[in-house]
Amino acid sequence: MEINARRNRNLLLLATVLALSHFGVVVWHLQLLVGVQPETPKFALMLLIGVNLIPVMGLVAFAKGHPTLAGWMIILPFGVALAIGGYTHFLSTSTDNVFRMPSQPWRVPFQVSAVLLALLEALSCWVAVRMLSASRSGQAVDS
Image (cartoon, rainbow, N blue to C red; front, side):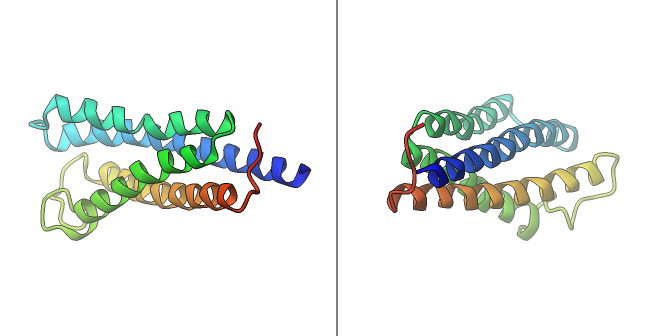
């Protein structure tokens, strides 16, 4: 029982660091996006910020003893963000591709933020899988 509680605390701590770091990088990335593409609709920016609050709410669900709900609240938005951001920033032929960006003052910070987002999203998906597997195997305990 003590091992499971410690494992849950460690998962919660890691998920908290990742989710809050990700949220901060998202806000920074969106500021850079507006610098690179000033025509970006404000509604899209607010929607992205709202969607990125879902994993933060998942942390609360995990802390309240709902690891399955928390796992899904973390893996779905981060998985979708990883797929869309991975394509947009690393595979597409658009100017959002970090390898094809024109030279401008926002270029390097935008590239750094895109790489950080991809890393944080991949790690967050891994943590969410750990939460889901712990809850399915009965290792997760109510806090």
